[in-house]
Image (cartoon, rainbow, N blue to C red; front, side, top):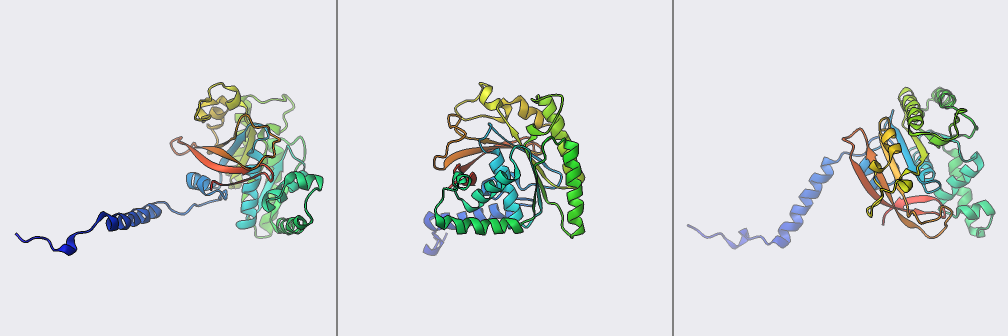
Length: 301
């Protein structure tokens, strides 16, 4: 029996590196590129795998703690980077303050400074450039008060037809926020009423063949008394359970519950709790950062 030659001996130092490269190549090959609309947040896109035609996506948070900011950021990301026509129904913010938010987030400038006029002269050029970019993007805003879902759906249908005449296709609808859609019978929605509204928007998404992202003020996590040291879960909320029956994706923006909504302290770490209801109902937690000065989310460094 012959002994192995010295060249047959390979140290784990060399073997580990080559094996890890093969594992990484197999892992990358296993995950296809994200199809559909992206959010611009790589970890969120990795979990959701894109927003697709006919999808209903619900973004929620406690009042004034990030759901609107995330929805608008997704809108501008797709309008500017993917050149996708976007329609925004702004039920809680008038069109000019909304435009200020878009400019602040895209330029990463202080929203308070833009609102009050207190900013350094050098910032003006940056704001002007961003405003010019946004003016050329295909973003349409509707801030008509008292709209019903049927009214909004009719407006979306007409806008889609208008884009079609110019060889363009409506790619995304943002509704901010679900709770503000007018219902003359009540000023506060129950879970069943929110479910009915979400169902109507799901039908609109399917009819127009576009993803619809709606925001919803969500106090259930904060009030349920069931939040443990690991943070809230979608299962803690009756509201989430109702919306999960019709929504394709639920995303909850979880920020420090002790933080004041109007705080303008430096950027903070936040958690995006995602539930993709059409894929076995799994729940994922994604780490991100949020800069309240410009109301912009970023990938966790």
